[in-house]
Length: 278
Ligand SMILES: Cc1cc2nc3c(=O)[nH]c(=O)nc-3n(C[C@H](O)[C@H](O)[C@H](O)COP(=O)(O)OP(=O)(O)OC[C@H]3O[C@@H](n4cnc5c(N)ncnc54)[C@H](O)[C@@H]3O)c2cc1C
Image (cartoon, rainbow, N blue to C red; front, side, top):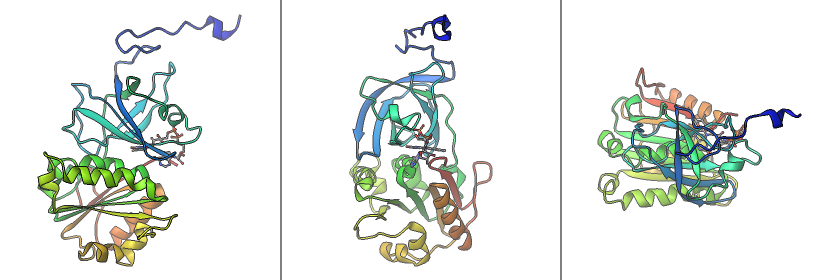
């Protein structure tokens, strides 16, 4: 007899309607909607457990109920802390252990979420300032999608500047639509109007701005485009989310301008988080 034949049959968890029992530290939530942007990017929204609390900008671990030991991956919650649902903005990695399946989810499917949120891209980790820069590449925009919808961000900063750099122009659609929505939102719109601005760049296609964010900071074009002074540690604050290389390069530039890295335990003038490992 084979090992597979000896293995216990999967149990149907009646409450979550999944084939395997759900561990106590995991929520099983329903997919509410899915929107595909490109063959590499999609957004999905799930129900929010009544007991789940998080700070805008934090991340959680997401998985699928497709195995006894599901693969969990870190995901920034893209919706703000007040939202009744939870939104995520995801990559589709070819043959990626999680996203090869996650990209196929549909409304009504179950998504698993570990109960504990965490992260450094939160307002609490920055000391007060005038202007908040959110520097992102690709799905690194997700935590900022949460923060730009949180009224606290506008109570704390007079100007909020979101930058996103992608390879292709259509990868910028999620952020562009979102900023438009935020400005027209009945709850946050009034606070965000005149404060929130988006600066986008596409590096591999013809686009008005085709340079990396590091180049744009160093050559001053970012500040010229926005009509603001160059970085000043007395008034400017930063949050960085992207690849390891983008983070290290941007961090070095901010440090050269006198900003210092902070954390939840020790708030300062900028904070960083990886958008993915690898
Ligand atoms: C703190 C943190 C927050 C994260 N938040 C998000 C998020 O909000 N949205 C999201 O899509 N991913 C996010 N990620 C990445 C995510 O955890 C997974 O890596 C991703 O979902 C792919 O999972 P996978 O199992 O299919 O492939 P993996 O085995 O995890 O990844 C395979 C390879 O794909 C590449 N890759 C993985 N994720 C990305 C990405 N997001 N952008 C570009 N290339 C990538 C890397 O080269 C990686 O080595 C986050 C990672 C960390 C550490």
